[in-house]
Length: 123
Image (cartoon, rainbow, N blue to C red; front, side, top):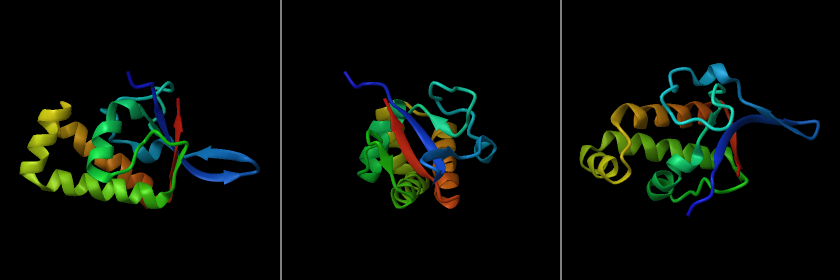
């Protein structure tokens, strides 16, 4: 059994604290499964997406920290997945995520990448 995981986008580290990304940046991704702070769009339920993300990008969400470079690699992998109908069909069948959800996931990671965010895993 896989343990729970929330994945949080942070915009900076200042005065010994991680500063969360602005929730408003992630508007349009409400369809994604959310973490413990379900109303904060800068949090996603990483456990729900971890196998998919690792398969397509080679990056595990089960890490304490993922650099912005890693976030960019995940965003690119999701963009490529959503652009490839054959691969996309196989992933949807395997992981049971619908097209809107995968597009929202791509959008979430793209926003995080473009805004310079890094990710933190919390389990």
